[in-house]
Image (cartoon, rainbow, N blue to C red; front, side, top):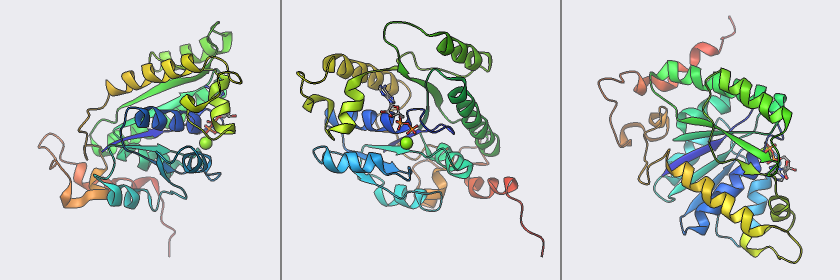
Length: 262
Ligand SMILES: Nc1ncnc2c1ncn2[C@@H]1O[C@H](COP(=O)(O)OP(=O)(O)O)[C@@H](O)[C@H]1O
Ligand SMILES: [Mg+2]
C-alpha cells in the first residue's frame, strides 16, 4: 500500500486538486485508491462520493487518527492519497513520516514557495529524528501551458537554491480541473462541448502518474520512517542495523513539544 501525501503550509496551493487528480489517475488504471481527507472542507471526500464511486474517501482525518486509518486499511488498497490541511505542523510532520512520497504543490507565487519551504523544514526534522529518508518533491501546480511567468521563475530559483527537488511534470492550468470539481465527475466524463482540452488534461495526468511511479515501487509497504506507529511489530521490514532509530519514531517527535511545568 503506497502512501502519497500532498502538503503545503499555504492554503490554495493546489493540494486538494492534486490529491483528487492523482487518485483519479490511479483509479483510471484500475488501481484501488483511498483518499484520506484532512481538509476541513472535505472537498475531496465530497468529490469522491459523487464522482462515480470508484474512489473511497474518509474525511475528518487528523494527527490523532491518521495512523489508525492507515493501520485499519493496510492491504485493502493499492494506493492511499493523503490530502493534508496546511494548518497543523504536527499533522504535516506525522503524515510526512508515514508517507512513501510527499508531494508539495506550488503555484507560481512566492507565498506558496514559502509554504513549501516550511514543509521541507518539517520533513528535515522528521528525517533527522528517524535517521531515515522521506522521499519528497515539489509539484508545480496550475502552471500556464504557454508561458513561464516571472513569478514562477522566481519560485523555481528560490526552491532550486535550497536544493529542493522538483517533478519535471507540472499540473497545468486547465479549466477541466475546475470543471471536474464543479460537475463532480472524472475527467473522462466531462462534456467536450462544454470543457476544452480534456484530452490534454488526461495526458497531463498520465505523465504525472508515470513520474510519480519512478519514486514509489508497486509493492510499497510499511517502509516509511514512521510506519512503526501504524503497524508496530507487524510492519513488513524490521529496522535495519544502519537505521537503529526507526523504532523510536513516536517518541522522537516529543522534543518539539514542551510540557507545562507542574
Ligand atoms: N491545475 C489547476 N488548474 C485550474 N485550477 C486549479 C488548478 N490547481 C488548483 N486550481 C484551483 O485553485 C484553487 C485552490 O486549489 P486547491 O486544490 O483547493 O488548493 P489547496 O487544497 O491547497 O487549498 C481552487 O479553486 C482550484 O480549483
Ligand atoms: Mg485543500
